[in-house]
Length: 100
Image 1 (spheres, rainbow, N blue to C red):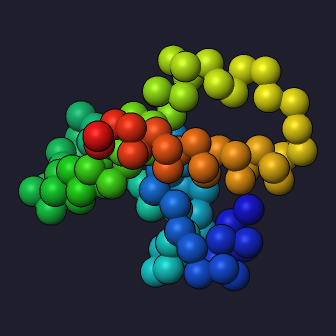
Image 2 (tube, rainbow, N blue to C red):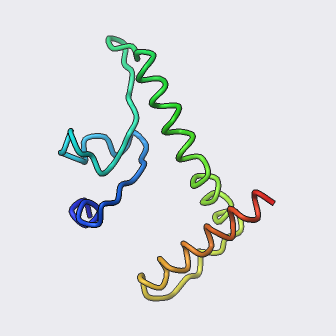
């Protein structure tokens, strides 16, 4: 998956669950936030980076929440390639509906 994204020049915004998946530190394909712990408090720059990441992920998270509430994808029985195109179209329509 990562090499396909890298070859296409694409990237992905992800939550902290994907931290450590991407091994290229200087050219990441999967961008994740910073995690704080008891011994490591986040700096102001890391907090700002987390905010920017959250702003970028929010519309997609909301669109998937709407699709789940509408239960559109529960009985989808088709080729995965078609499902990808269908899902992209549904996300565009969902964002249009939300912004309307």
